[in-house]
Length: 473
Image (cartoon, rainbow, N blue to C red):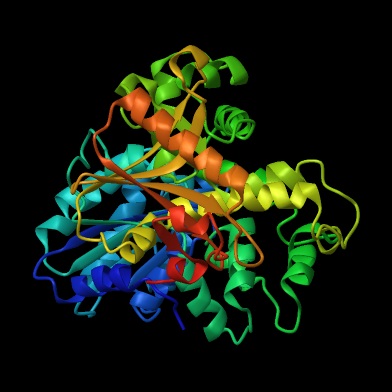
């Protein structure tokens, strides 16, 4: 049973009734479920399907493609020596097929693109000169190498320019979809346990498939990440290599951003990573953002040139805190309960999860239909001007001239607003007004797990968003 993905399934299944040939690109990070989605959408019935070979040279790729053609009933008189000849075979498979719609699925397309290969030219020729002239071909290309797909297929400047009829960027599950997934799998977890695992691995479906019934969430995390031969213990080394052809520079950026929770300016990234200030750096930052590993944001009221980049990927954050210097204790995670290191990470990871579920926060606030800008904001202390120095991770700036100043706090029970927290919140509001000069009403908003304790300070909070609200679809 497939979890979620309703919009994506509708897009894929709609092409069956299309009165033209369709060219669809599906891309997204490793393990996000691209292949499974496509197979489920078409009931595992394809006129032709093929998957590129990891690390295969041109000869190996062509041999593999020929084998896939043979499985579709085609026999070459002689083996193809280039991709033009290989795609001629695919044309013959289509011409001889009696399927009403010829569904062609080519997975891991980027792996087929080897040094001095004519693969892209052959693909262009196949679509422009053959498939697009028919009404019965559905060509689906897919890859985990998101940056490659964006550069070479989605934003192709050559023969494939503007040729896609549809594209699907498959993203992580939301909390609601993870809850649906565990329920379908018969795994009994409450919402706090689902939230905790989400903070570790994010919403990547494969990581959720690794959960086992009858184990606590701590036991599952130990088995999946810390035990000898744990299935995700070495995942980090493959994650970025699967998305980027030469991942070293991307990893330098990621490791630099992991050092500063609020994020870094471009100049700070250059200083920390040792990379040069160039158009290539801009391209890498854009690619990391398009893949969902980082976010780029502009602080409220500041100029566009002051953009900050912030690490967002849950699994990467967890790796940097706990797995980079991997402990040898197979029960490491179970022993971390209530340690300062764990509590600090819980706060950071919860903030990231909240930033991934801003739509749910807006829905709870009743502003789903209101025009908004989502920002973060910071300022340095300046005692002479009465500025305390503030960092605000989430500002929802609304078209009705209200700003929800959101504080995000993870707590195992109802959160208690202390005198210190109240003072800090008042300082942030004061700094925001003083520095930006905003005339908007500022509503303190708390996003937390179980709500707040009613005390002398709780009345200063205008809105409370709970964990249950984040699970709304």
